[in-house]
Length: 202
Image (cartoon, rainbow, N blue to C red; front, side):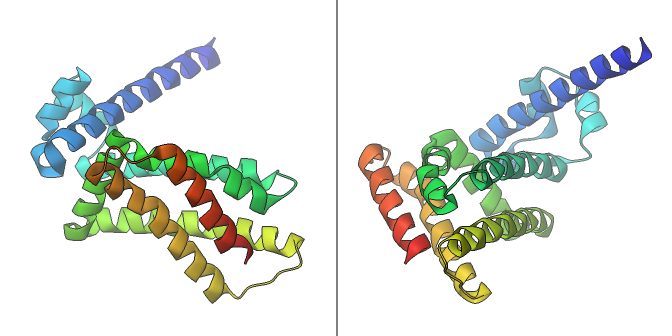
């Protein structure tokens, strides 16, 4: 019974934590990092400010949790790709995941707000830079393995350069979807896949 109770309490705690993250994400999108006060976040989350501080020390900690959630989603995708018979084909084939994330206007607005805050806040900069390192290491492993399966070997410098180009393609979509909300998603994704195939396999 003790174990069941502990599990239930853990589930409730995680539910509340996610509730805070969703509320904070909405507030950051609407008002920006500085405009979204803890009072505003607590009202959106429908819980007291004190309750929020029970889970997160400050707004930087909330951003850290939002970023970590994104990292874990990406790593889960990479694990799935790693189980594929042809990793390079799988990486190109699953481009729709990253594409949809970056052309979602709400997710794009949140990502750009976090990036803007990272440009002026060293604590947030450290959070996003570490997340980027984790994702880059993981995709470097995938890409190296996929290339090796085809008898190709690239230097780390060449791999990193290609990954930077790929990152620019995906992250640039967040800006493009705000500047041009009517972009042709089907044709853009198709073109993106061809560019990725060339970048990964040439």
